[in-house]
Image 1 (cartoon, rainbow, N blue to C red):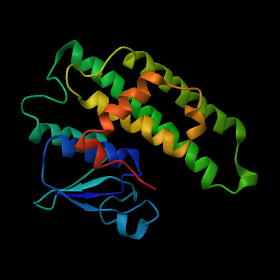
Image 2 (cartoon, one colour):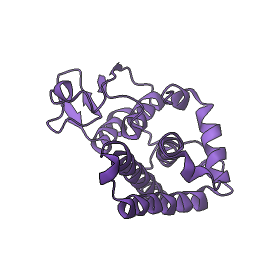
Image 3 (tube, rainbow, N blue to C red):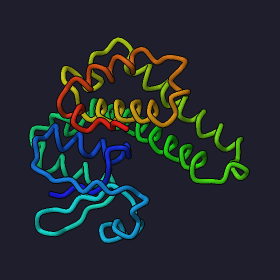
Length: 202
């Protein structure tokens, strides 16, 4: 398999971390969204990640790629239960974490891709308030727990740590008020090889 994209993107990193957890063999093509001419070979929108399967099939969108990875690489449902309340809770937590990623990316684009005179401050603050709301909920879920997914890290942990770390890199001011449970979760997770290998270093 070939994973297209850099771990600076939280959507690429969460995908790569799942692959690492499942011990699947893969190669990397570290393209950024600025590499649009190359990316459109894999995704018509020029977005990351994309996953090229050994037979040449190309999967796009991190949610669809992770769904495939769990299908082929997690028959025992270690990262995500097959059914039941625990599965629904993990998917809810993952959805909140993914929302943080989306709003964080949108805020970064608003700040860095627009000319300064065209940045819409009320919209930017709205995006950041959504990030804070998501972090508040993740902090509540993480409080008092070693892992969000049970006795071992699972999909909820992967998404939550990737979201927290991404905000720390792209909007560090949003973490200045302190999120102790999330900070501790990130520290524990990033000590594991699957997280450490995918952590973005500027």
